[in-house]
Amino acid sequence: MTESASPYISSARVSVGGVQPGNPPFRIVEIDGEVVGTARAMTDVLLAAAALGITIHDLDDPGEVRWVSGGKFHWHTG
Image (cartoon, rainbow, N blue to C red; front, side):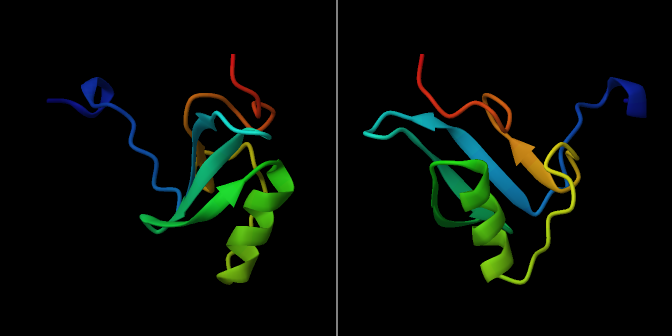
């Protein structure tokens, strides 16, 4: 298999799951493969990373944050 045929796998330490139903809706945050909590906004992701000594410089950089099922502005179901 050539590199161009290989799927891209993010090397980001921070991964933010898809939106989960709730009041308010939330997303699960994983850092280094471990669930560290939930986020209800972008700032929650930044705070969770900072609490573990990770500084996120660019929320749009897939090498820093992997957004699953929607980007940084997707915080509601539906």
